Length: 281
Image 1 (cartoon, rainbow, N blue to C red):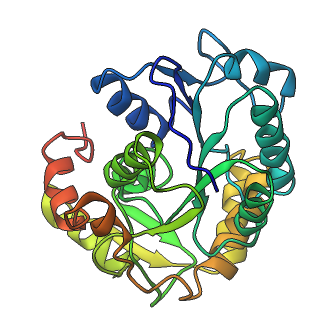
Image 2 (cartoon, rainbow, N blue to C red; image 1 turned 30 degrees about the horizontal axis):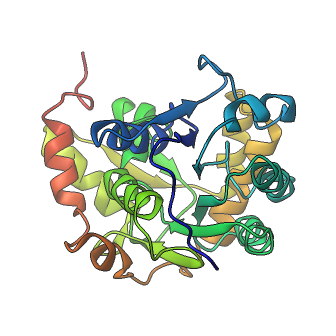
């Protein structure tokens, strides 16, 4: 693994440039004076994972890329799509690729293996569930409605702040020594979903309930709300396979990479409650 120095004059590509992590990674690069090309389906240079014909324009002249696949690396065909993108990036002269991966997901692990075999200077960021799932889509509507119903019980997860993921991505994209490395990114402690919901309720002065429901009920509800079938299948996999305790352990990779502890959920809750995002109009 060469870990070649990136040409500072060449922009860094950020896929998923409007997503939870992508827009934060792009902001950090821009604030540091590093040329950045943040792309999405609606950007000036449009990028669509399902339309390979859009990839070349996004990759032109790029020195490195932050690769965040939508909707998730666990969906069927995602690994093969990322593999095709990595190969095209190499053909376009883009050597450094930093992949946002999912911890404990079979499909994500397949994508990682393909990237490792691609010939790129790869770095893999295996992230756990995001704090921001409670404040930016996914669980937000349920929190506002006062009741989050999920098919999960006593399992604990070391949720992570996406601000920490963005900080780590910035380091691995811009500093040497990370090629050929895979990092596991977690928060400082594992928590139960019901405890997290309770903490949010206390912070914003509301009674927000957590209810455990059967997975079939959850999946059918997602389907009735118009969720596309690949995403419905993803939800089933997450709540029947991935959330089985396999990811309960806490990693110290964030602290090693950033020279500080990862942000705690309680700090996130206090900070987010002050924005009013969980308040009822």
